[in-house]
Length: 73
Figure 1 (cartoon, rainbow, N blue to C red):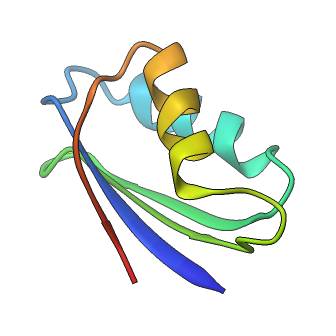
Figure 2: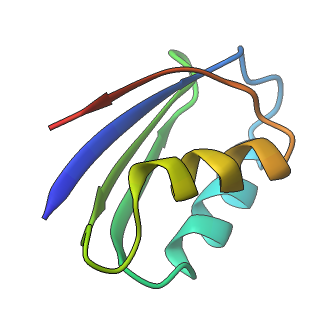
């Protein structure tokens, strides 16, 4: 399992959390998603043989959340 943290622009509403978590949880290969509202970060754990970090980043941007930076481990 690989982990990634995506720094987003400031989140403005709590419903953003549900939208991001619901969409990413349904994505094949993503094991866990946690949105940190106050720091505007999305923490994920995923199987890199099924989904790549840049695919997750593209999904976030398609949802309307620009990604400022990504840290993977």
